[in-house]
Amino acid sequence: MPATLTVPSPPVDPARPRLWALPSVRFGVRRLRRLLVSLWVLVTASFAMIHLIPGDPVRGALGPTAPADLVAARRHALGLDGPILVQYLHYLKGLVTGDLGTSLASQLPVSDVVAQRLPATLILAGLAFLTAVVLAIPLGVVTGVLTRRGRGRRTELAFTTTSIIVATIPDFLIGVALVYVFAIQLGWLPVAGDATASAYVLPVFSLAIGPAAILARIVRVEMVGVLEADFIRTARAKRLPARAIYVGHALPNAVTAALTVGGLLLGALVAGTVLVENVFAWPGLGSTIVRSIITKDYPVVQAIVLVYGVGVLIVNLVVDVAIALLDPRSKIRED
Image (cartoon, rainbow, N blue to C red; front, side, top):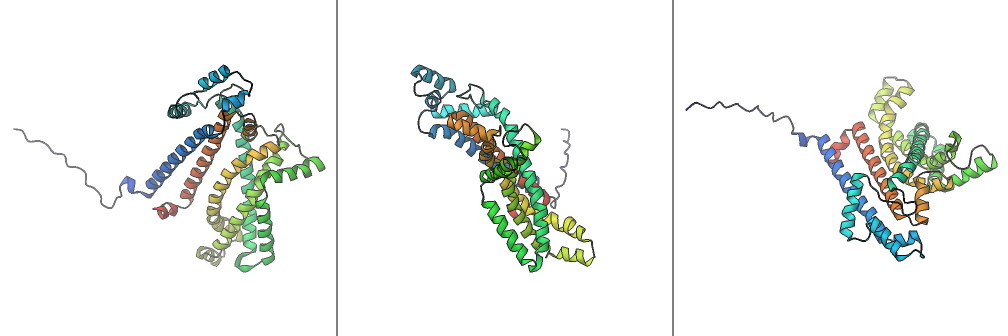
């Protein structure tokens, strides 16, 4: 009987951690699990919304004088006459295939309505967020430098008071005030629409001023703390230029907390476009959802709520990943 050849297995290095034991892998698995659970809750809530609204959405969209056979035919076409579980599974299948339903008012696919209006909202929210960051970081850094080690008490008081007041004013009220001053009184900027580049100024600043005030406060507080750190004292002992100390060493460490808050503010800022878009007649999702609520076009409302929710989840995920890249210790602290 011939002897069998046994191939020895490669030795296992006990010092080498397994793949799932790496902090980055555990971090990714936790974030993916959290995202999937949040998506399921969001999808289920958006589905339940149309069934929790009192009354018949089809009857509300067609009007009280619509014939009963027309209402029944429309309900059957939308799949609203079947069992709840069947409707839920049909809704999930539609989401997977990109079918968000049909508008009760226009009879157009909801996906087409969302695709037509979404770019305007994304552009508005993106420009507002960039504007808020551009305004907040220099303001927070400069104020932090001026008020470090208990200096500039009056500057700190004025900055804190002003930022609190500005941050508590609703976006749409800021928009109304900007329209009154710069569009009606001065006539410098257009009131509504997005036809020209100047039409972006008022809605963008209406959304950006409040978040900029909040971010500037966070950056100032972090900047004051970072300037007292040991590595800043070492940089000063080496007689590095002030620009290198503040921009090269202090700023990257001060913006981590501001990035976390900024991500949360971006989600709130996207939701804030609903009212601001209606103030400026902006052709985005915000004005569309208000019009759909008035006309009882609940499939469109359902889809837009879902889009807003998914946008917030994606923003939070991006912020978590960005923080993990800037500060790898954050993955370890969560274990």
